[in-house]
Image (cartoon, rainbow, N blue to C red; front, top):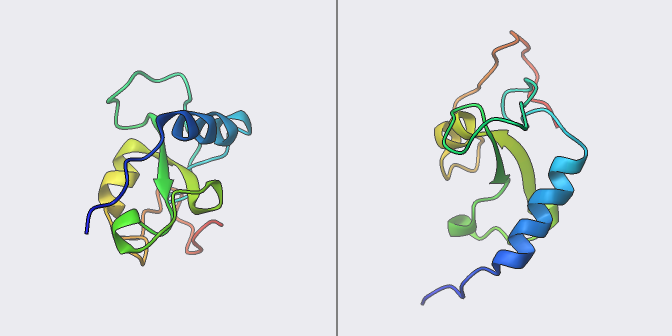
Length: 94
């Protein structure tokens, strides 16, 4: 079974909505520099809380801000991947 193609207009709209509030990385809790260039490890990317290939929806409610590197380390894990705490905090930010 193949998945339908994702709508890029909706993707871009969700990306802009999330970036508007300038939230910190949902995975490590550190601030995101929203001006970094594409492919920089610290750049802003949108992460699916429940990955699409694990049954997650491509909806705004299932998306969160993350650093590119943090998102790569999380990969498609449901548990959030390795605990990425640069700040030393023991609590995963929500």
